[in-house]
Image (tube, rainbow, N blue to C red; front, top):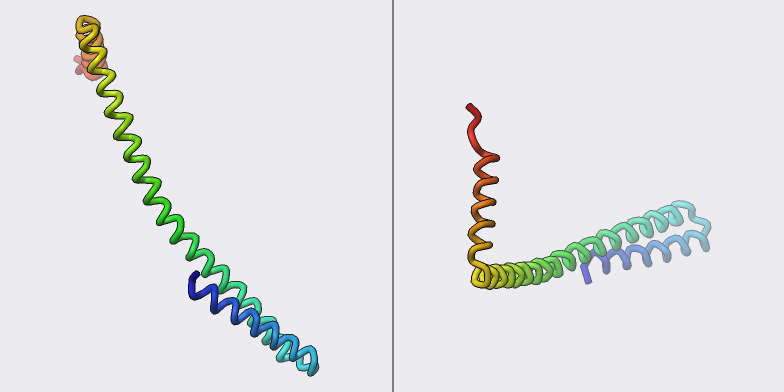
Length: 113
C-alpha cells in the first residue's frame, strides 16, 4: 500500500475528529478545519491509489508484452514451417507465385518515362 494512502486516511480521520469537536464546542473554525482536513485526506488517498494503479499496470504490462512477444515468435515460426512445407509440396506453384509477386512489385515501382 502506498504511503500517501495511509497519510490520507490519517488526515481524513483526524479531520472527522476535528469537525466533531467543532460541532460539540460550536467552534466554526475547528469545523471548517476538520472539513478541510477530510477533503485533503480523500485527495491524498486518491493520489496514493492512482500511484498503486500505475505501478500495477506497469508490472502487468511488462508481463503482457512478454507473452505477446512469445506468441508472435511462435506464430512466425509456425508460418515459416507451413510455408516451407508448401514450397516442398508444390515447388512450381511457389516459383510462379514468387514471380507474380516480383512482377507486381516491379510494375508498381517502375519509373515513368
